Length: 550
View 1 (cartoon, rainbow, N blue to C red):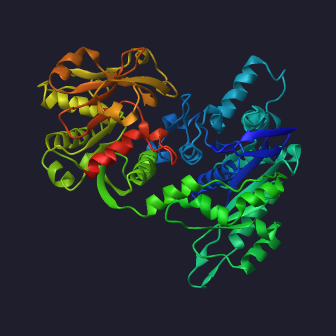
View 2 (cartoon, rainbow, N blue to C red):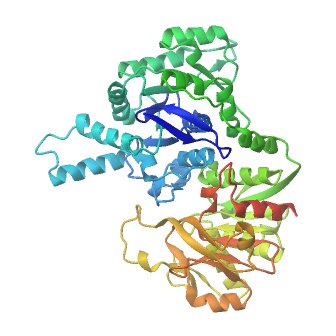
């Protein structure tokens, strides 16, 4: 079947001769944190830039149903999709690279797989069979692996297998991958194995043995990798490529060098230079007349690497020991910085370390302050002190989710005179509950997947900073919260000078607060960082950085 797909806005078309979606699996070996998500996103970007409809999904081996109940110290930030799925932070990389929203189907955990299988068993779906890892667990994994491919919406589905080959948790995924490779055939599915080539300074050479052992582990499980992507600090020589190809049963051109880079956004161009996309297309028997259209990407990188100015922004939060806890915020600052042709230098300030006595000293050198999202009482008073300082000293402020709620609490206490004003999350007996539990949350007992999640509309008020940023009056943004602005105090707070400039048109929920007399004081209940991409930097981050430049 011959299908014509639009590739770019210039009405260029590519002919793709295919019957069904092709599958690419990305596995990791030797050690964790090698960057499977970045490699998967980079390959997807190159294939997308050639005209293929490409998506990426992540399979996580942990038994949590989703990362929604995980402490950020455990697994970094919890990324939220348009349809309200709480997912792994790698989905953020996928969206930032591809500029295409992901969904619930793009992230699956062992917990979700087992939950489904057990529910099926309780209903009697297995007709009295003994429920086993093979075939019942692997069949459910396989079903979920093929949902996106069977939808007809994609030409290529890239599946990242979480963890490291050899982990006991990932064995069912590797077995399912083996089955799918057998069922789909070599022209319709392949494996990219990301591995480490360590450099031993004492010996003065790169060592291939860890990679050989990692591939051997895969072979013992019945899977032969088709492509090796080798993370390395030093360039891989032709001799090392030949050695890896010989001992790992791959072609020499399928040994791909992945050097350490200054920024993850260089990865697609590095993979393009190594011809990873061409190797993949050849193995999958796909052809395209188009070279990758990466002009916009190169323009972004040029601005990123050649800033004309610099701003220093403090990120005030309580998970600052782990930068991945604020991954999307950090990336949104990179996008906004490139848009403003400036370097955004983010400094983490632990909110537990901020007090009324030292807030001025710790924050006086910054051009702007962002108060980050979070849950619970720890570090709250430090966030309130940070907000008081920037409000009184006309320093640009941006509050996200709990950061917005803290802005309301601080304003109620110090401007409206509501002594003891608080959120009922932190103090159920507060005399002024300016932030309160949402009505729909009051009868819930389960924690997982029960927050207000996903995309909701927000109507912006005239003459607001938000409207000027977005350029339109009706927007949609992603949410993840249980507590909201208490409308009982709206008049008192607005009369004192804080304006509600964004509301949900259906429920009246306050989504955005601003102080019009302040140079840039904006708090949002939603998470704008989740929608910022290379192609479309988030307007609120762009305007915040611009305000900091002034």
